[in-house]
Length: 395
Image (cartoon, rainbow, N blue to C red):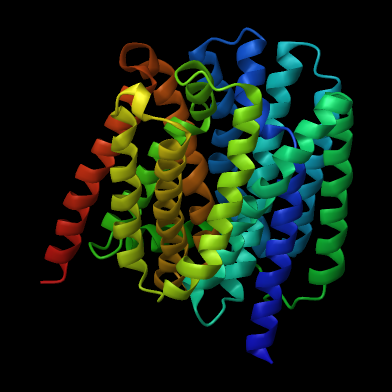
């Protein structure tokens, strides 16, 4: 029965994640293009992403504390509803102060959802922990198959107001599903958990994290997320500005890439996952970063087929690394699951935020291709050094 319940929690949290991302990705794929068309400079594009992702990292530890005091399902539902309210707010985003405020709200909503959902996954892990997290991390890829195409159709037939309303409806449905399916999941008995206890748990967590068998892999994972941040705000602009792709080409590329990746996940990646977390982190990071080096090829060689192949290999490597990290933290930090879930949530937004900010300032002197190349080269060096430190720590 325990194993069945763990599988059900993984399934239901993944479904909620899918509905959340489906609604969000109706319009988010156009976000960099929207900012550029609205007159945002490249550094301002980077700052916009920072305002979204930094609150996730800052808020995650405090939400981890709240998960000790209340049902994590309530916090997860609050996060999904925050996304829904953000969609409504974008209909009325008439000035920059209002717009920036809601980017922060979106970040805090993401912190609520991703911290509490990871805590639930860590509290009810599948037998193959890495495979369980891979289901969760695949939800955005499944949303990418359909959501951008639906968003493009709605934009062609109607306008952004309709898209934002559709997002609101889908995400509200996701919140209702979470309440219906997860409300009765047993949660740890509430105790007189204090701030002092919370701080003691974080000290214990960082002590475990500082171990030479854990810290190098955590560093590698963060470095790869930083590299992903270089792409988050600028990959679509690279396709548009450097490769001269039109909107239709970009809209076709994104769902097609997600569809192929999802097929490859079920056919190849999932069966190959052996729950060897350290190897997944290192090998995934190296594969992803080596693929990134290929963006320095001459532009005539970066045709749609080659870009598709590079992007696929890069995403496959990053996916393995991210799943391996979450599984590693679940195993190594099992005594402090709420804090471990908060820490796991902090990794991605911090990496993406600083990657986007770095890209905003370096893309001028380096260009898109130079930025992607040097990002990959830096992560390769850090991965090899970290792997050497980890191996030396075993002696």
